[in-house]
Image (cartoon, rainbow, N blue to C red):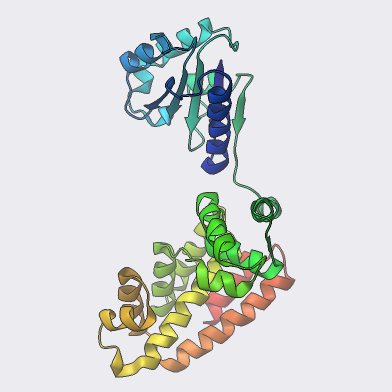
Length: 316
């Protein structure tokens, strides 16, 4: 029996794979002795054909999970052999269970993709839209008999983005330490917002008055599907750190001092210290005030994110 699950949302795809594994254990292999995982990035034909040809141990079939075979640099050398084998499968419950699990969307021009995408059990897991993401997160809290307030939900998504792996971890943390209704303060105190290198590059570009680069970096983030509120939240967060660093004055003569006072990781302290030298206090206050204004505009405007970001960059 053949399965193919893939897409950018590797968390939900992985959940599907785990559900099949659990059902296999329940119906066929309670001990889990006949479940085999293959590293698709490195396997060759010998590894694959040995796995599918060996009989199960105290069971009439096996379950084989092959992860990220489309990342295998030598796949083109033996994909015809693989497809020929798949053509012999009747795709029935009496055969071995073979799951192809890909944590991305493969090249649709590949022969193997064309073959697997025609399977009865195949599904692409795309990143959730903003509305579906909110519903998904709310459902995760409901499973724990907890709820999250709308402002706290917006903040959590702004902090983490569309990364369901991290959101799942943060939900587990929040339900363990929060009361029944998770609040904004809970999210602020418990959730570690992800700060990526592009946010630092954006702050550098703004500090250097490189408006063209700043706009390019924001457009790249938006075009790649990153939530605009997440981008703004991370910018606001970094400028808040810069204001605090500037207020320390001579008390923070190096990044190590900032790391201790601001209680941030080393790499954030290093970048914050460097960037704080690019601004004076009045500039930082002006920028921070503008960012808060932009935050309000986002709440009342839809579809204008690029325009509002462009105006921000031009005005700063």
